[in-house]
Image (cartoon, rainbow, N blue to C red; front, top):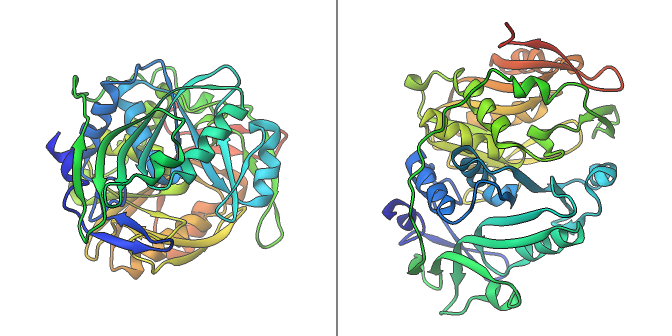
Length: 400
């Protein structure tokens, strides 16, 4: 319990646009890193209040790793709201329904269907814009919100702007944190810690990972350089129809078995598409995590990248000079995101031991490109062909 409270108490705060304060928390900002025990305690507190049968909805950028840890330990399926570019959001509407304008793009709610009874999990409540948008999206999909849990609710001079802006909602905050000064101060703690979750036994005999990539829909998108690329509608990466706990557990085991734990300080992933996997792998391997996100954090110096449907900047979260890290990824397509992450790490004087991905798209040969441009060898669990009308698994490391 103390580890969780300490993650938000007496931490530095920085002023960001809009007269807001950002708490440099190990949980939200991964700074200097998020150790697995703190993540486990955080997930265990949530598991004490949330039944395993309840679908968890979160926003990937903020709490994707927390949802992944909760799913891994407690057995909850996951649905995720993601920032998405304009073109891709339009392509995904037939699968996920209407989306909402958000941060210069769109927030697409992936994995929620009409009739679902869901629980929202978020890391920090400030003004409530993201949470409010997420609530409206869930209800527009015909789903019912049972509970809303927030790890830390910010107050400014005792006033919670987020709670005032969402006054018609029953928000359960585990902590209220005063951020009016230079350092944060936990004012109240409402953490009902009734069970401590150990790692579950994982049965891989059903090979859920392979099955989840066989015969799935492909959506054509235009890359930043004008090429036509194919986007896979699969449960692990796109929560279509959602990311099942059994699938996430199996993926964490298979990725985790590829990581040389004795040789590294942290595992690192690109947060805006891989956070839920990163959280689960952290608990399976007992390794701290750091990451990169598409939006500036404590360090505003980022590195440009270009992927199959978007180009932008990756910013470091918890990446420290001198770290020895191992990279994890969900999917390698053209390899652009991983190359950007490798460059970001090297720009911060980080040593990269290697990388592993759950899937490589066979036709794009992204792993070869990464090897050629960076010298980093990427292991993969599956090769998936996207050359036809549907996906087809062509290689499986665990196939017997």
